[in-house]
Image (cartoon, rainbow, N blue to C red; front, side, top):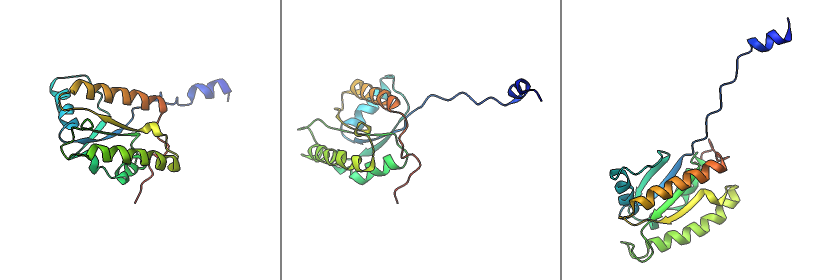
Length: 155
């Protein structure tokens, strides 16, 4: 059989699809969740890659939730809440900021790039800021590529 004919008959590999990151966002009920709602009702352009997890306060985001999300297949985690000094629970956002600093050290131990965890402050009236933050994070993670821990699960 001629090799040229064999090559023609071989099935062609499907074109690779563009990588679309999955982002888990732990958001404050009082500020960032309201901003996300405002962005949606204002019909601001947002990509559908983000899965919102509504928390009463970013201070309630346990580091194990972040690690479990990243090891379970999320390409990035966003933690977003009230601006410092505006927390409905007095100091929850300060607690979140301290936890994210500690998480950055822990992520190094798991071999996860620190850029896959982002902490932002988005007020309730800042729907445009939320949409911009989400879209920028998606682009940044798209450049990083899929997380290497995909399909690993923490029990």
